[in-house]
Image (cartoon, rainbow, N blue to C red; front, top):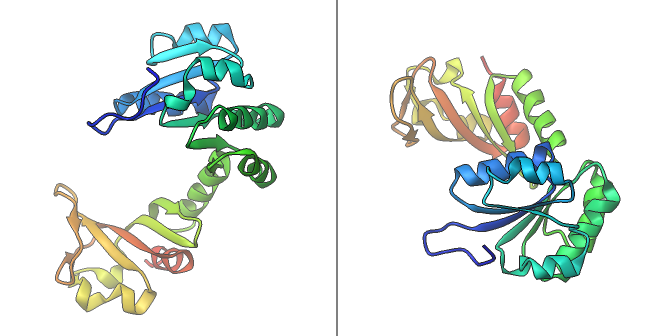
Length: 224
């Protein structure tokens, strides 16, 4: 399996840790037709997932030599899906970096853990619990259906069209002028998604994809 991405756009990914987060990532990658090598020290987990994932290996991922023997440097990316055991996650990231993996993603539970992981070699740190909590909070406090916030204070949200946009074109309701957000697209029940244009009309019950500074997006999505 240890090879770089192919011409068809598929990638090869190493997933270290077959807990809930690791298996969710691995299963999603398989559904997307990507190649997955999973590593865990627990033989029961290795056996459980051996028929579901592309390759499953019982190994100590903190052992740089073992990683080199598995050819991990030839994989496109690695995901360290260990969160609760901070020492183990740090040692695995360090071993992957020293083994030559060029793109390392790591799960962190706290910001402090995330900073340590970055310093020892993680290129991307994700905070699943924190990010899901943020999404749910925003969905609970407005009419958001889904929500993504980026690191630079920019957000993307899916929300029901507020009344100030009903039966008007986007040029007429002008969300950008009044609320500082850009409507990227409109989804009407029973119809295909439409990329937004100034002449795009909006009706009650339409869903809008809006983008902009987080505070502006939050304010727009709270409109009734």
